[in-house]
Amino acid sequence: MGLAPIVDLDTGGVIALQTFGDDLGEGGSGHGDVVALARTVLAVSRKAPALPLVLSLPTRAVVGGSAVLAPLHEALRVCGRRPREIILVLRGGFAETDRRPLLAGLEGLRAIGYLIAVGDLGTAHLPLDLLADAAPYLVVLSAGLVANAARDPRRAALAGSLAALARNAGAHVLAPGVEDDAQLAAVRRWGVRLAYGPLLVPGPSGRVQVPLPVAEPEPAKLLLGPRVQEFLLPAVTLPEEATAEEAVGTFSGEPSISSVILVDEYQRPKASLDRSRFLLAIASRYGHALHGKKPAARLADPVRSVPRTTPAIAAMQVAGRDAERVYDDLVVTDEVGRCMGIVRVADLIRQVAGMQRQ
Image (cartoon, rainbow, N blue to C red; front, top):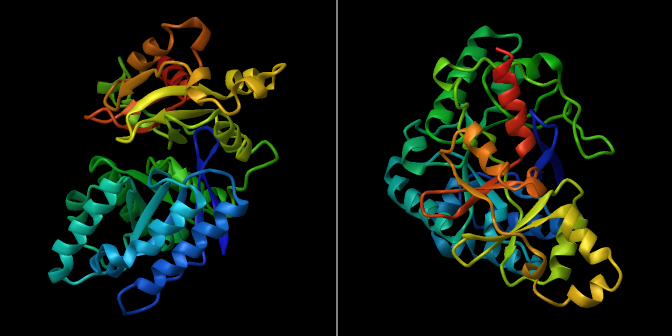
């Protein structure tokens, strides 16, 4: 089993972990693959930080129905992870007769809380209209396209077109296997923000030193900037009844976690724990004794949330309403108020500053 950090190319921050070793076999129901995924989740959770995991899931396992996926659900329960922290990447082709059960299975996984992704776009035997029907949270470009893009203009053009298609369909785009500066430059030309590979190895600070991309904003975006969903990062969440000790454990597991969002059973944000203020309160004299067994919400701040369609400048105005919390993460919500992720104010500042230099 291997892990690769998924990096935000704008900030150098590690936002998720790509798992390897869950190779998909041929044929069958996919039950064996799901058992392997379950073992991967258990193994990673024992030694890796509490970042979202990206797992490969064969289409036949989804077509096989909910019983086939039971080992994965049980593994999450055992290790204390929530479906919202797992991105399932759909891999492998499927027969046209299986489209309806596949879409029904994906909708069931989404209802539970899993984030759905489509993998190997560009070389996989998946119809492109699946991006419309499945509405994936993330699209993973083909590693083969990324590997040859710097040397093959045709593949570069194909990859750029697919990245634009995925973004227009409302999905984030991930470029796998980035090995050198030429590939990284190509990935940025396509407007891709998330990537992993040998070139993107975090240093001791937990961040990857990558050059900032040169943005060319569209005229329509000059006044208010792009929408906050373009800067969305996965949120680290806990149930709203979680204790302060549980929150301490989450922050301690990964130094790059800047906030923990407390959510209700419907994934609606209820409170926000800022890393610095929360840990300072716990570390104070008698802090752990006073708060450790009590609900973490006692030390939480009100949620500062913005709808996913909010422009960057408008989101910065929300951030600036409270001078003491101006750099706290903003929580991005969907149309029904569920937590989609967070946006870091530093990302918005960088974007607006770039617009002003134009």
